[in-house]
Structures are given as structure tokens and as C-alpha cells.
Length: 195
Ligand code: SF4
Image 1 (cartoon, rainbow, N blue to C red):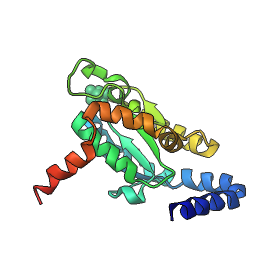
Image 2 (cartoon, helix red, strand yellow; image 1 turned 30 degrees about the vertical axis):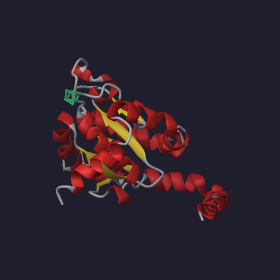
Image 3 (cartoon, rainbow, N blue to C red; image 1 turned 90 degrees about the vertical axis):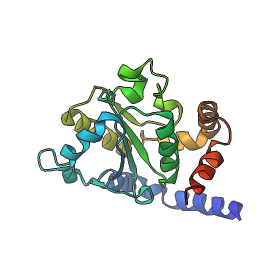
Image 4 (cartoon, rainbow, N blue to C red; image 1 turned 135 degrees about the horizontal axis):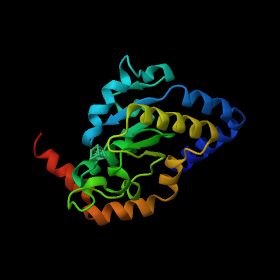
């Protein structure tokens, strides 16, 4: 069954290869965002969507469901507990999908570089396409990052979703080293007890 599905996907991709530039152009013009408002960056999100900076003019819109989004914003420091939710949310977003990380914390831990409870290098666990440095970056810098991801989508350089598929074993190994093997099942069991 899975073999048939794989063949079907390959066939579809080959069939539409000619239209790929058109698809990329359409994708960059209509990015729907699922925002994971971690860290201080949660405060910087509303100005982006409202009248002063207004990223809706780029065709972008916030969306609460990962199933309908293609751009994942991670807006600041990430704790291991939050990272589990980030990984699960990322895996629920359909391909092709892109990640922008705001602020210094997701890049190298930022001011929390020596904290026991902050992830120091987010791209060991999920693939980041654009990182915006700053603590916290100004909305203009975030918009600059958005322009960069649009450029990368159009040129085909925004390939984090492909890297995640191709190097899944490596990402999975890093995740398991941090959380311990079987963390997904353990977490699911923990939540079931509350239902
Ligand atoms: S980079 Fe600075 S503003 Fe952003 S989450 Fe870290 S401490 Fe907060």
C-alpha cells in the first residue's frame, strides 16, 4: 500500500515539474503562519500583524492549525518541554514547510547560554530555514527575514523540509538524546491520564 502511495507521489512530482517555478511563486505569495510564541518574541508578533507593520500585504496570515499552515515561526528561547510540542507541531505541518527562528536564543541560547533548561541550538532538532539575530529583533528585522524566506522559497533554497526527511535519523537521534528514547509514547501516556 505504501509502495503504491510513493509511486503516486513520484509520478505527481514528475508530472508537475514544469510548473514548479509557478508553484514556488504561488507558495511565497501566500504563506500561512503557525506561530509558536515562545520566549519574549510572543510580544513582537501582534505588531507585525496589525496596522503599523501589516504583513498581510505580503499574503501572510496567522493560522491556529498546523494542518493548514506552511510557515512556522519560533519566536524566542525554547525549553526542552516546549521543544517536544514544537517537534510534534512541525511534523503535523504538510510539506513543503518552512521555519523562521527569531532572536538569538534559538541560534545559540542567547542570554540563557548557561541555563540547564534552554535548548542551545535549535537546528539540531528541527531544520531552520532563516534565523533572525537580535534580542529581540525589531519588526523591521523580522520583515527582512520574511523577505529572505520568500526569496529562498522562490529560488528553491528553502529546503529544510527536505533536509528533515533525508536526515531524519540524525534529527531523531538528537531528539532521543535530549528526551530519552520513547519520549513520544511516554508523553502521550502522561496526557491520557488527564482525559
Ligand atoms: S533572544 Fe532575547 S528577546 Fe528573544 S527570547 Fe531570547 S532573551 Fe528574549
